[in-house]
Amino acid sequence: MILVADSGSSKTDWLLASPDQQPKAFKTAGLNPYFLTEKEIVKILQDQIPELIALAPDITEIYFFGAGCSSPDRHEIVSNALSTFFSKSYISVDSDLLASAYATCGNQKGFCCVLGTGSNISFFDGEDIHAGQHGLGYVLGDEGSGTWFGKTLVTDYLYGTMPEDVSAKFTEAYHLDKETVIKNVYQKARANSYLAAFSKFIPQIRSTEYGQALLHKGLLEFVESNIKAYPQYTKFKCHFVGSIAYVFADELKAICEANGVHVGKIIRQPINDLLEFIIKRNVE
Image 1 (cartoon, helix red, strand yellow):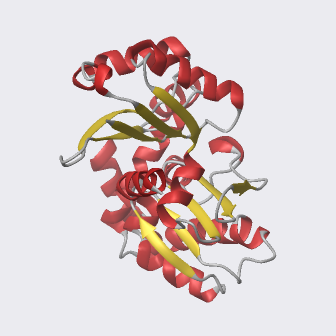
Image 2: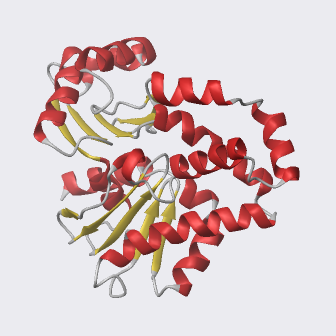
């Protein structure tokens, strides 16, 4: 059996593939080693996927791709946690950027952008990813991400700069106050996920002037600061992965087209395409 995982800051998608059977899906919380210790990851695995852990003796290979897994020391945190339960399995840990590149570019050169809870971009040369200076996280970066949109919505709401009709809908949906926001952003863990959750409000106001302006500003900021940072951005297709890219694909395509960006695949999550790529690669 082969186990593949794609982990963001909010959630982790798992697919278990075995011969002559349909892949079986599992979900857990996000397992970002920048925010979680090895013990915390072990606890999440133990509590949320006991059925999968029970199959450990039959799982020969594990391919884990995750946000925050961009350096050897972070790889080790995740690898050690997985080894607690899958001690006999071959375990590979790599970045979520590589997962997205495999799922979208395959073996072809191109740009792969992540627009989900966070945002990032990399260039894939057909074999390896070449990450740039982006991926600075929700405090310094994450342009056009769910966190960026959520932070903007909350700020506009609390500052009173949100249009009255939109503000009324926001109040009805969240009953938010300054103290609650301060506590969740500055005193609790996973502030990025907390803020990103507010981006789910955008579909309710998508057709409004405020909603369209918000989408345009966030997506354009991603294009300007991330994609256009590469001099050769017009020479290769630019693929997108993540809920923001997928849900707001029409707005994203329009902005990309207006800026000379050639859009390739837009997928919500890479897990299915990723599993297909790994199986095909292993056979070859």
